[in-house]
Image 1 (tube, helix red, strand yellow):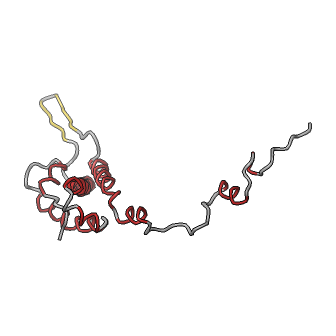
Image 2 (spheres, one colour; image 1 turned 180 degrees about the vertical axis):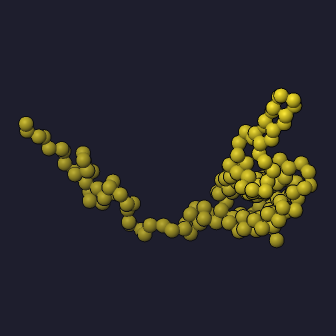
Image 3 (cartoon, helix red, strand yellow; image 1 turned 90 degrees about the horizontal axis):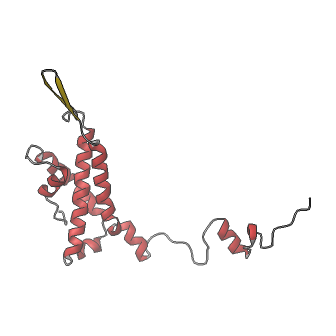
Length: 169
């Protein structure tokens, strides 16, 4: 059962779909992807969203954008989709229309926007913020040349702890 109230109308609005010809495909995508999308979110955040209207609106918008973007991107990759360029001919005048951008790229950008909106509320982001994620053992410094110098107690010019030698020419 879905927790976020993502609606068919909301997904169609972001996809730019005005008629009902694609309702079945959009509904199928929502049924397939929405539970998986909600699973990536922290359960405590989802439980709290019922009490916080702003949080619920943010999560719903992010999920709607991600689902709409996935649908638009899939339609852009669909070889059976209507042609992107249409040509009309009136006597000797020929007019061609072409899209301003690739639908697959637009869909991917819309999905990325939705996922970025949901990222702070994901299980992995919350695990790192709550200390439940992977951490360094206590007392172990960061890695890298600067940490090596710090660990060795050296930090002067060149990382040797002493001034650079003068060269005699």
